Amino acid sequence: MRVAVAGGGWYGCHIASSLKAHGVSVDLFEKNDCLFSEASGNNQFRLHQGLHYARSAQTRHQSRDGYHRFAERYPKLSTPVEDNIYLVPKETSLIDFDTYFSIMLSSGISIEKVPLNSIEHIDVERFEGAVRCQERVVLTSAARAHFAKRLNGTVNLNHAVTEVRQHSDHVLVDGVAYDYFIDATWGALPGMGNEMGRVYFEPTLLLYYRLRDAIARPFPAITLVDGDLWSVYPTEDADVFTLSSVTHTPLGRYDHKADAYDRLAAIDGRLVDEKRGLMEAEVRPYMPDFSEVFAFVGPQLAIKTKPKGLSENRACGVVMNGRCFGVQSGKIDNIFYATDRILGALL
Image (tube, rainbow, N blue to C red):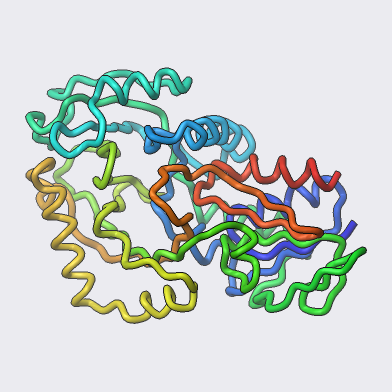
């Protein structure tokens, strides 16, 4: 069997690696000059268990299960967050703390309540409650090196798939015959998006900050739930954190990825300064000494693919259309669900 995979991010690399382990001949195509060049290498680097998704049981269950499978399968491609805190604010959360805590416990997620007065740098009067849970930081550099070695001879860099044509007994990918084709580009290929569902492309701007020298280590990861809130999360460098805002990180919604790229290309220092001001103003009521804790480093730019609609569901979906598969998910931990579905259909 011969299979072509488009997209050299987490989904494409894991699927290609799994197929190769089963003796399948695989060609992986990535349009950039290295793996993990797009959303898979530019995000908050969080491997979570679903605590973001109080309003989507399916997403929580997939994330919880995927978290443990990821840690077991790729133990050297992530590292534990030493202190990981989720906080429910009094006035801006969509649900109260007791409801949030009950939802997470009933989902089989291991969490513990944390006394608010034990958490430094926050205004405790603004919160109903807090929980501590296990999460991990994804090590993108290590992942890139791992899959470059694992898929040696399989990866075709600087090759953007431009044409996929199905026939009864094969599929032509840029004129070359394969038994099956897998689109792991998260809706970027022309002609595949409609088959995978209604999606939009969201250019994003995260901000990097470095802990100031006087701040005690380890500094906790802090995430506010549930709703249009914010989080501060560590990276591969334990002293560098990302600041993400549900309100201010997105830069628009576009039906075509080319338009989202154009939006990123138009970002200048003025917009970065504006977004920085808005995000820090959003954080400061809850963490009054944010600017004394962190020093600004710079922006991170990326494009996310998301389903249209108001649903909180971010569960993985796999669609089979003849000899073509489409994978749609925004969560790294769902790579196992997608691969199980594809292997079950092919082998």
